Length: 328
Image (cartoon, rainbow, N blue to C red; front, side, top):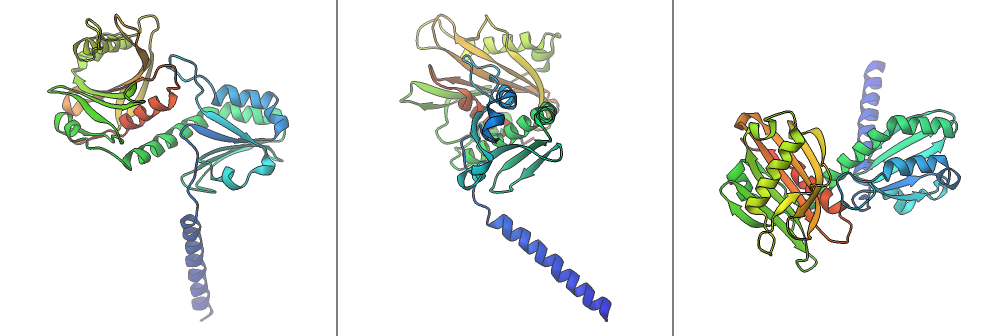
């Protein structure tokens, strides 16, 4: 009889705990902050010294491929004593503090949702610096991945139809509010969102090429540049005669290997120019190897936003591109 009573009490306790956890998750407030913003919780004495310098060097490093220097993240520093209220609702939080132990932890949806909280702690500044050296790349990667997802969520709230992308290339894309089909050809799509009364815009290009276009030799980045320039000459023209988009010849683009939609991908970041004109801006080109369909699917984003920040515009393009879903 005692065993039965104990079992019932255990079950009730287990269910109560589960309900309590569910209730906690249900009442979490919505997180806040712009994309690519990080709240750094650290006392002033550490922020003003070597620790603060290390954090700024890593988390505010220049973004690859932008024509002007812009930081990876916008950092907002708060001392530990005011870590409450709206600060706790920040979507990305890095807490740096002294402790009787040294280490690192990562919490999801601790004070709000969606949210990532990273704890970096040590017995002294030197130990904290060591943890930062070991963990900063991981933290940056998780923040960027989380903000890509958050950007996609925001895009979905007012998404426009990707029917032409699906029909022509067999993939789906999350295209946010304002994106319109600017050019529709049998083997090419140009999708554009204009702002500032048409003086600036974000663009997404969709096309495909055979394997040999990218893999004809070991110089992958040169092959991608040649591909981009041929597409630019064929489709992306300026308002003046004899003008078309090319890859900025003075600087070699950055090339990375990554994975998109479970497929090997070459990611190229650099600057585009308009030949015989003065327009320019950043681009990101994803060459996704689609072995099932015997092709590289090319998804490219480029921005024209003269004299203004371009980091978040390019990040939106990356969120769109990384939303790709292969339908066949």
